[in-house]
Amino acid sequence: MSTNRVATDRPFAMPAHRPVQISLPSTGEEEWQAVRAPLMNGWLTQGPKVAEFERKFANRHEVKHALAVTSCTTGLHLALAALGIGPGDEVIVPAFTWVATANVVVYCGATPVLADVDPVTNNICPRDLAKRVTSRTKAVIPVHLFGLCANMDAIRHAVPGHVHIVEDCACAAGASYSGRPAGGLGTCGVFSFHPRKSITTGEGGMLTTNNDRVAEIANSLRNHGASVSEEHRHRGPTPYLLPEFNLLGFNYRMTDLQGAVGLVQLAKLDRFIAERDKWARWYMKELSDIPWLRMPQRPNDGGHAWQAFVTFVDPEKAPTTRNQIMELLQSAGVATRPGTHAVHMLGYYAKRNGHKPTDFPGAMACDLNTMAIPLHNRMDEVDYRHVVACLKAIG
Image (cartoon, rainbow, N blue to C red; front, side, top):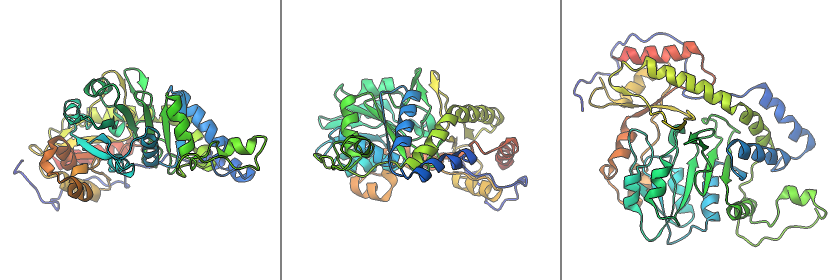
């Protein structure tokens, strides 16, 4: 690590500017107007707007089925439950991801097995993944982190054919791999519509699959295990009769208010990604002369969704630590965040699994050195230039 450290009160020549947030949802009048219909017609829970959102999302991501849920977390839990994952099973997840990826495995009573990541892509390392496979491995959850699809061909070759691949597409709406959209690259995929994602419904998620049986089970499980959905029951010939409940399910339904917003947002997805891609390319050009700041990787044969622009602060070359750099930028009105966290270094999993930070060196390096800088659809050129000016002022 470099010894050329500086205190955070060093008088850097930071230009004055309005605050630039790390992310802001791009919503407005269209979304506001969209919620009028469900509010006026009284169908507030899962109904026709959700169904339309599901159809259009499935078409955009080239899958047979899309099931809207309350969050990506509940969607991942639903996917594992629909696949029959339970006690005694192991599910491999990357060691550098949002904690929910591992948590959903525990929710099922199964064991999350961590695999290291490649610090260049931030995604699961197929070679390390192959070492973690046992006779109890039932699934792997590759994460398309920050909008860059994981190496799905290498992942498929790293695990036996019976092992399910559940894509964590939380950051990957609109992303693609080898010309195919994320969400249809494994047994199923799950997306997030949290406000920090490129499109949002507030909270919310979407489970996608080409497997009819998985879709059938998941559709029942998200609605308490009911044999028919509420929409089909109310629109059917006997709305006064309750459905059968033959499965132990959950209440993971999306509301029609969210579905209405999702429809508006989905129509803007490709424009949002194109705009983010334009400014991501600009960042890469403008920041290329900072020797201590490594740029994110772009796919050779696919589309990056650019949920976030996550750089890597080289600890050997940087004038100070990643955290001190983030503090300096915050003082200049530029919000930043670590990319995400290393699961094995979080209190619960460190205690549960007994891992040391160095057990997953790639994840540890990403935990300590990744830095997301602002990239979203409510920034303008002045904002982007301010971010670059502040980074260059650090040295």
